[in-house]
Length: 153
Image (cartoon, rainbow, N blue to C red; front, side, top):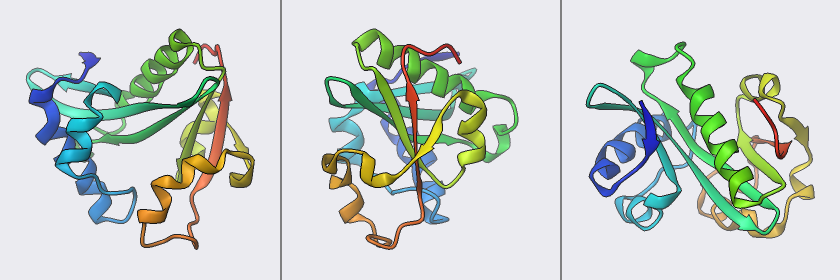
């Protein structure tokens, strides 16, 4: 089942994201950050267990970011991440954004979903507000990708 997150999901979201952050695959999140942005999150449940999450953050009238995409290792390969991305894309389009972007180490996951690689510098400077918190900044190797909306993926 896929649905918007609620405050009772916060600690599970934190654990899911930070397992990958510990492996240096994504930015870590604090409990406070997740609570403050809980409306951005969509979660995927298997029964009562939260096994995946993604967040959609609107940056400007035409631009939204899909971030914090994480699926428990035991549930990978089932299409859960694609469902979460599709849900975020639908939400972005419904909100009126004309583009969604991701910063990723896994461009091959996003290419079949219609995202295309762009230069990071082509994105507004505002997106770097989280990047400056990262220990990899400014030597980050994440790849910027963008999807024109409305898109049906």
